[in-house]
Amino acid sequence: MKKLIILAGAIGLSFSAMFARLSNANSLALAFYRMFFAVLFLLPITLWKHRDEFRSITVKQWLLCAISGIFLGFHFTCFFVSLDYTTIASTTVLVDTEVFFVALLGWLFAKEKITVHGITGILLAFAGSIIIAMGDAGKSPNMILGDIIALVGAVFIAIHVRMGKLCRTNISTTVYTTIIYFFAALCMGVEMLIKGIPFTGYDGYNYLLALGLTVFCTFLGHSIFNWGLKYEKATFISMAKLLEPVFASVMGVVLFKEMVAGRTVMGCLLVIAGIIYYILRGSQEN
Image 1 (tube, rainbow, N blue to C red):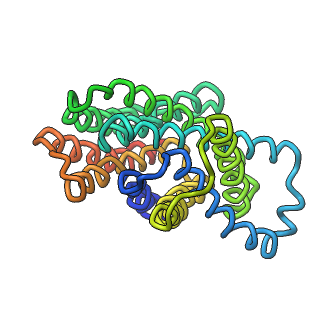
Image 2 (image 1 turned 180 degrees about the vertical axis):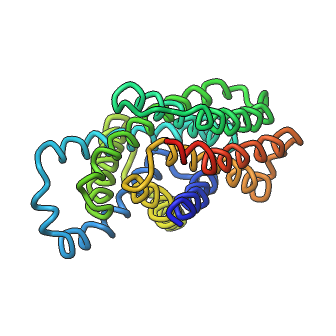
């Protein structure tokens, strides 16, 4: 059941690109308000229901949470900026290559082993992701730049996931997400100040889109993954996110008329097959 809940989080996460495309506000401002609204909602709950736990957090835990949140902020920046240059499918696919970086960091620093079946599942899903991206190749003159930004975003989210795995050992989901969303918002706020991006002046339509990002993509996406970090390996969490480009590609077709070739459909099927194989075979041996 926990695995199914985690997989459902990919559905919420897949709305990110749709909300970003519908917005006409600055990408970084949209990402900032996504986190800002999340903190506004979570902070009263944390200070009231979890105040004892919040007060007992050690300096080391604060540091780990801060690092996790800052890299989450960097990730959001890369994700939304990448969408300005390339397609929804390419952005979501390349960002979700985080599974490789998460597995690599786990092998290097956490002594986590990846079995043959686990590697097979990852490679199947990644092969499907590459096929999806190839379906969009050549449609934008700035696509390579967008792809590079998205790939950097994958590295940032992998560090966030690894830090989160350490934090979630002794910190509840509510307290952890409140802290990391605060630092993510702080990170993007500083970036906005440096770049001279205004915090106000956007119409109600864009604020509603940011609120939609908070509800669907943050609470029903990232928060579910952060909850799952306590029960599943970080590599599985990242594997589950590979479903995001499947749902996002469908939304791109329906809402923005982004044409999808037959190879993209085949890629989606490979992603699903890889995840199922990882769940049934690879995760049992880890």
